[in-house]
Image (cartoon, rainbow, N blue to C red; front, side):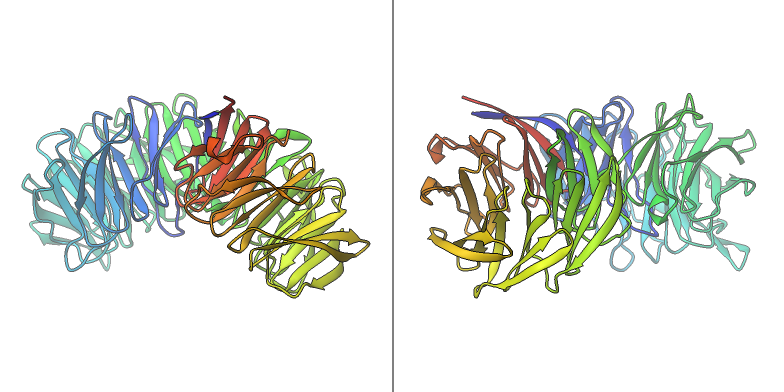
Length: 625
């Protein structure tokens, strides 16, 4: 057997309320780059399923930028390190430098691709640093800031300049290289103040983003005071500002220039994006207000933007990316989204196996269609977190961290009425009888809770610590795994459990149990990295020596024909076994998900879907030997 990655459904950019995010693009390939967790994601705007991921940062990545020639990416992380790596082949690492002592919020390449400036948090006055990209040598001193620096910009034409802005309400201007502080813009009590050689302090709140125009003749800063101010690119003299007429009514988080330098795009906490015409006198007037799709809640605040060729890209707090066309601003945007947190559960709809439902622990359920990708978020009326998810017929069943099981009717892309069952303890596992979906078994520490519909019919104390459970599709049998590594098989008689057998093979706590689709077998996995396939009738081991993971097994899935089984582990690998072949003839997909694999599902005999801590979902094609 062999495997091939068919599709990648990307995670969305990490966002934080009250702060903007700074995404970057490559004009040659029409690709954007952003970060989530330890992943740096490169996505094509023409085909969002065309995704590449760099995952070698040891700490959460915070910002990434393409080099001017598009051949390299500089990405930074929360530890203050910058890694420079190639965009092709295996993302070969060129250099890594420790630039600041804490999180980096923004970085920019010089137009000749020889220098990089980075800014963020630091100790003392070390909030900004510029260095040679190949040696890490400093190319200047950046005094003048007293608090976190949120954004920086490198003048794209000679003579080179660097502009920075941050939480001290300042916009600082540096000449070089080697760069030296020249002046700073600040407003105190409404009075323009000159610091050092000159400058007006024009912002009265955090300055969130600063960007040079493509020709370097001017730069613009935007702030949480709802203002945008335009400065001369060479002297840093204030020459204009964005009009308050029709302007933003909330903090402006990001700004991006059009390729011709005659317009800018801004996004704001007021949930709107605006395109501004920059006139000959360098003042901005609203040309068009862009409204992004959404329900109007907090998650629709816009926190990031980019103008790349004909594409206008906006990012919302909830992680929705909207793409407008500059050539047709009246056209509705292309919008897509995804997960931002660990995708902990994955299931397919039996009525249409090409439709996937995935859930992350933050309570988000996303619908995907194989071959198309994102198909919408399921809007639930409750916002509880989700640990386990099951889909049966026209209903989804979830368990969370609030001692409740939710049964939610599913109407197309929307959730209908939801009913909650309080089971009184923290659910550890959830299993629904597929052929008799009113029956559900929920494992808790002391035993199991049996549900029929929305009623608790019995709570059984089993006398051992339960760690996993499964119920047969016809509802006639249940298997309960213990912390001691034993599998207890029970027949279901009415509303009671009758113990039939105890199987001992595992050497660690049971983490997952699944029946095969033809119900002739079942499989179990444990925290000691072993999986076992059992014959249901004889209760003997059917496939043994499945010991190829290096960490706990989190999930497993059967192919619809019951001939293959896949296991996913904390070791970031997926392993696929043929039931009629020895375990040594397995396929191992290494590095399937950064941080671990948490969800698996087969959509057909040879298509496997996986999800993980990196918030990605991937579709794999298996080719039999």
